[in-house]
Length: 92
Image (tube, rainbow, N blue to C red; front, top):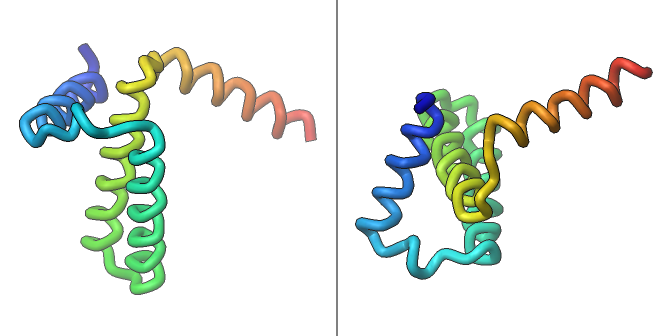
């Protein structure tokens, strides 16, 4: 198990303990993600390193939750996406 998979398991444990796994939907998670990105923008504009870190972790928390809930295999999906990005931008 990789560190990222351990983190996803830990996130899922937290969500379960708080009951969020029972109520979260893709739609509700997108609302949370939008809110967290707005908060991240504020911290970036403030040049506040701890705030940036905190908000990035909130964004990552939501993204990893969405990855888990949608049964996306992170390593495979990320490699496929990065290969597509390289092909797209190397061709320029």
